[in-house]
Length: 222
Image (cartoon, rainbow, N blue to C red):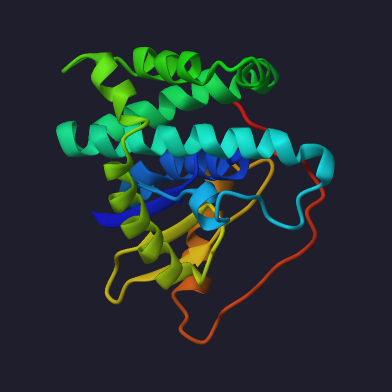
């Protein structure tokens, strides 16, 4: 098994798409996947990237704030119940948030942060210790320490203030990369070919960049 860390901000649809692709290829490629915290709100100093269109700024700020709270819940669950708990929470987040993004944003606009977080906790099935305990972690700043620690790892492999997703492959030697960003993600044999190709490229010490214009919006499915 090869340990693979995927650094995600839950509000990022691109990270969600990539995470489902990694989840699919993992059994065939012997990957032991963990979801590591990456907080866009912390990265952007509680603002948004300057490239963010003005009409989307407030929505993005609200989503990043909600995501920060969810990451604190991730870290509390990780500390209390291990990586499987984080996997369950992230999968539940996708089913609650990305299954109907419009409804999720409407709930946010109505001040329904706690309702969304509670729905994710309930959907995850993590009732051990009480869902209210996990919900309380959302506002406990002590969980920011492991979030920042994880982000430092992402920066080390993806570059300063890298984007989400960033992936680190703990082979010998370990390597990492920003992305991949795709919409839609390939599935089946095509998904496996993409993983193989990316790991060959990313494992080459002299290689550092490949990019092309984004032509598709994120297509999220839970």
